[in-house]
Length: 161
Image 1 (cartoon, rainbow, N blue to C red):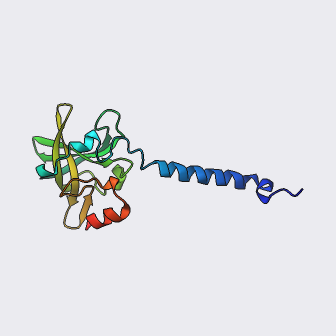
Image 2: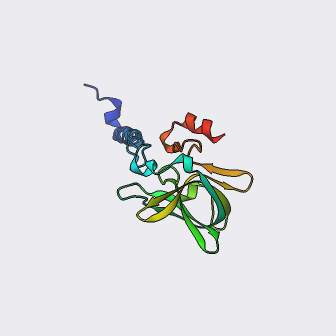
Image 3: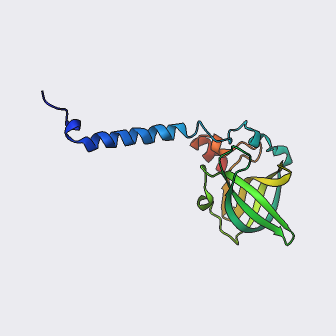
């Protein structure tokens, strides 16, 4: 009996197993959003009727866990005035990490979103962060607060313009 070619080359079997594992792991990702689902308690704090904005300078870019049990968020610390420093939640880190949001310490930004109280502290939940005239990082639909990370790529592109 002749052995199949993949038994003659065990590395092929290993490669196929690794590829199938990677595909299944990627497929599981969007289903478990780590507390960032559209109707999760965190996103229910975003009230688009309370849209606000402020300008300031980025002091720090970091990750934070917004609520117990949630996946980490990418966040920025923005100095609005000499005595006002605001914590701004941008998006889940798995959607865009600190290195992916196009901002650096010292950048002057205009942030649009809503204020929310979490554990007795006010934080700003961003819809978009604009730097200068040509750069904007948008993570929510400003009209209703729908998070981009809950949308398909096509829906995201439609709302980025």
